[in-house]
Image (cartoon, rainbow, N blue to C red; front, side):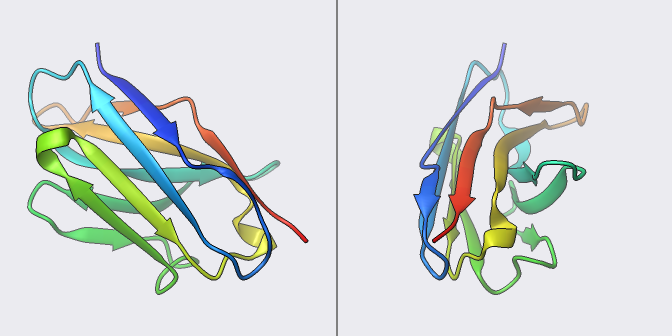
Amino acid sequence: QVQLVESGGGLVQPGGSLRLSCSASGGSFSPYAMGWYRQAPGKARELVAAVRNDGTTNYGASVQGRFRISGDNAKETVYLQMNSLTPEDTAVYYCHRVRAGTGHIDWGRGTQVTVSS
């Protein structure tokens, strides 16, 4: 069974930066993609960023140019560098892993990011 463990969340002031990490274990095959979604109170879960096994990436419109995703396929680890944070970035950030072939998505438990002065 795949397990995803996130770290790096916390409280940061507006304009600050945070770096999230997510490590996967228990998978039998390399993933098709890994990345991050987020969910703010009262809002739907939305894509933040993802990186595919061919190295291509995609970002949610609200984070484009501020966030950067990177990954280490061999370690099944992804990182999310978040810069120029605003209070609108406050949410629980969930790591996800897309299985190659089936498209099944595994989820982490989430890590809270709070942007506040």
